Image 1 (cartoon, rainbow, N blue to C red):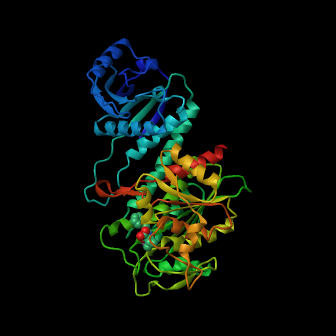
Image 2 (cartoon, rainbow, N blue to C red):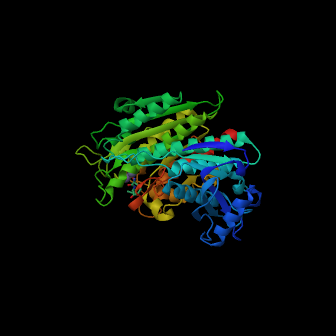
Length: 491
Ligand code: BES
Ligand code: MN
Ligand code: ZN
């Protein structure tokens, strides 16, 4: 997928296909500057009424002249549509274009600009969606599909404001490439995507973008006294890794934002073994880690002037003879003791030590990202990630970044009333709080390790992958977090 900007009038351009917006009254955008022949030709096709009324619907028709085809997209009210309509339209346009053989695409950008959407937002969303939708699973099937067709999208503009559009395209591309890395890592089988593999990916990103990576092995993790993290890793023959990746392009003394990603490369549940149905999907239990790596790639591609640290506790959760057992009490790096009542609540056990480790950076903010609880899927389904934070500004910034990038999140309570559910008779804290409010008590558990800084937790159990026929990782919430970080650099 390639992009360019054209300031020639439409009558001077030619391509395999042109994208045209049709409003609710079957009218084309008035300022297009189409030739009379085109205009008449197009109006007669529109009169056939083949374009469904719902905003975002598309219809492709052959035409005469410099464009071989037209892809109509319905936008009911051109003065009043927002990012969400734009995303839906962009997705449908790209899917339609991909379904037919066409290499060159002219997309007059002005049709998509109104008081809510500016050039930079439009070019950013279109380029992101174009790359995101062109993703093909890097599968291990023996007969590889033939190479994908190369598309060239020309954003046509009436007056050339090249820089904003160029930056929009650059950001959109960088976000989509970060998402695609996250999808690749999520989709890989757990016998390939091991903690060691995640570590090699962190090293590669660090090398490509002049960041610093540090990989701690079992011995070094033991030295740090991460007893909680290690108790999970004990059940597997595969060595745990603690992965650190640092992007230091902000002001020397400005405090970093630390991103912590859950990196369980397979979650069998441990001794509290999961049922067999769909257990394969627990290969996605490292999508928090994959999100951190995807975001690092995005900010690397953009060379964002900001300090960001990524931390990934990575291991498997397996039922071995030496595995941690229900009833075991372990000591976390923070010194707090934890009674493990269910070994399947392992995400919080690896994250808590990473959150304690984060203290050494004296961070401005710490955000952890985790496929933490099935209860989160019950609460919010697959459309919104859950945000937990005691800091209203931080929570609002994350929600806003989610809205802006159509990678939506919803805030959940983190009130102290829930904390007693984690009381233990034998240790400082229990690792589960019972069936009620399962995603909240998981967040409450983490909160006990985050007293020294401003913190938010994002539960992505419902948003990180799709099940069923479209089974696969989604690359969420890379765009939310990238938007959040990009916004910080512009403040
Ligand atoms: N990785 C799972 C959470 C999960 C479940 C994500 C389903 C996506 C889909 C996590 O480690 C887990 O097993 N959580 C338990 C916690 C419970 C034992 C308190 C859960 O949600 O059942
Ligand atoms: Mn689990
Ligand atoms: Zn898990």
